[in-house]
Amino acid sequence: MKTILKPILFSGFAIVLAACCGNGDKTGRELLIESLGASVQAGKIMYGHQDDLCYGHAWKVEDAQNDPLERSDVKDVCGHYPAVLGLELGEIELGGDKSLDGVPFALIRRAAVKHVERGGVVTFSWHPRNILTGGTAWDVSSDKVVASVLEGGENHEKFMGWLQIIGDFFDTLRDSGGKRIPFIFRPWHEHTGSWFWWGQKLCTTEQYRALWRTTYDYLAGERGFDNIVWCYSPNLDVDSEGYMERWPGDDIIDIMGLDAYSYNGHEGGIEAACELFRSKLVPTLEYLDRLGKEHGKLIALSETGLEGLTSPDWWTATLYPCIKDYPLVYVLTWRNAHDRPGHFYGPWKGFEYEGDFKKFAEFEQIVLL
Ligand code: BMA
Image (tube, rainbow, N blue to C red; front, side, top):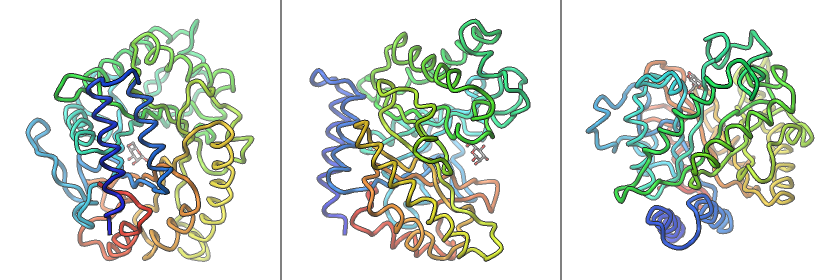
């Protein structure tokens, strides 16, 4: 079933290796973009899962330093690792050794490197704390937070310290030859909603753009990370104008992402909820495809999923029909929390509808490792 995928994965692997070994004049960013583009050109969509190697439904890696990182809920179900591994950096800015989800950064580092060595693609998200109030990323009690981190703002210096911590972590992501591995970074996501301190109602367009530029200029410029592919990811429920309203710039962004979650609550039941999701997602992917072509960018469904997978055939009857006609580089479902039984978006062994994921994973178009 996966014969056609091998050459793609091998070419991707070769490209990633070339990036790691410094062959040629191209940067890791350029080589990873080429590799992702080759997958799209071949008509493939990579499947991704958040935190996949770190934990899953009712299990977690206990020994961050020595675990072989061979367990994966996705692999348990279909025999393959996801092609894309999402990892989360929230609370790294506080200087501690664990993320907001309790995952040791030592484990996150090892998982990222291991996944790239296996030929996969890594993407980082970041839910940083509210620097003004000390609350979480979801603390939207003040609309002055973004202003406060920008140049001239009271928290600018502290925020630059946070970026320094992120940069120091990125600098440790190296292959066995000591070369920085290429990866995707997707900060300041879902800003078209107003549930994070950098959201729509919490800052102006200029401030949001300046937040991106500050982040980019420091990491890509000052720190010289030419191995980062940058992803922008508004939330579903915007039209194409809303999507572009706060666009950080063609020179910064490489991937036009979209975060779009399938609904659970609906008076017509789960089928009506899935239908509503499909009816919103398809026209959004239609304009995303157009925007991607206009701007010469890759497109991705950077976060998706149905919490608790309450629809028996969500993968094959909701997700796949929506995505199959669009040149998405990847589709990533969110995490399977090990400590919250109903908080899962990916498959796991023993789940009653796991068979539907297996069918999805077997579609020729879908790439796993
Ligand atoms: C959210 C939830 C939270 C988690 C956060 C960052 O969507 O899964 O439990 O802390 O993502 O991973």
